[in-house]
Length: 397
Image (cartoon, rainbow, N blue to C red; front, side, top):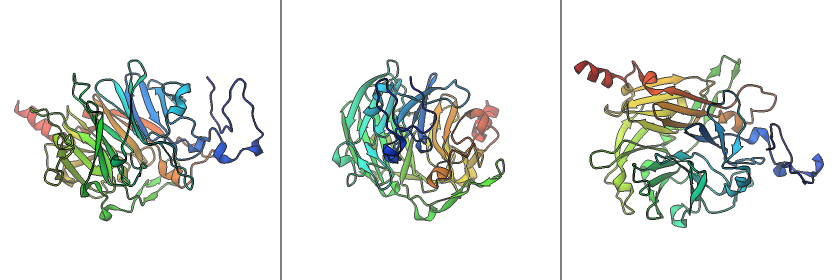
């Protein structure tokens, strides 16, 4: 397999014809190193799947994998193989479900500034990870989108309970058009909800991330001026009736909302009369991805506004006093782009995308740019307000 570790103007093939450097424009480059920014990921056994949405030129593969046992700077490999790279246009945050399947949304959109192009309708794609075979491609309907906008389809959450793998639902955020798309695997159908709680909060805009980075002696602070709506959906464990609570938030907001999944599974579900405000996480609690950990009954948030990870125990009222910052690093946790909980561990992908947006990153900057960290959740929440309920319970038994 050919390896690309620096800017490459064309893909190398055995019988390929290669042009001189001045005969190709930047948009025709096969691989531009700085333009390849990992955004989403998930973990399955000994593999990690990493996505690189096509937001610039020179991105040869949007869906990739590595071995999660690799210690340092592994090369991304196209998934499922090199021959499949053109079967996907642009993928953001994938999700591995309990049935060993990899779900994703291919937006079908090339998001190059001043050169945006919708290559195809967005699709839900599912792979069986036991065989690495594609088992579904479902094209979203025009009614699932708002004015045809596809750039906001940046994450997918899968609602399924073993052993009923065929009766799965997927919840897809639309941060650009303040909506939620629901897909039923059994029915092979999809529908859209719109609601005011999916929109960003004007009062939570304009915050700075990345404080002065003492380790490298530079200031990578960056003013966030995004207006992103619904960003992430997390699911609790099912109750005695098999119903889960769906916990969600816009990126630019400090509030957290909830609704039960039986409402969303109904194409005519009434969000207005069933959603509830869980509370407010507090100042500078704007967060991207979040997930629920059943064993500790905590929700963990990628707390973008503070370059860290925030926790909240769901049996407590959501208030600033009942949240805790369990990890923080202004360099190595600068913009957690994705957060996943796998078993007893939380995993985060950090991409420092503000540097990319400002074109700070360049080949002369030798600092590590992308990180994947993981930690045991029970250790991270120990002796915090998120652990207090468990300690009280233990003392009573």
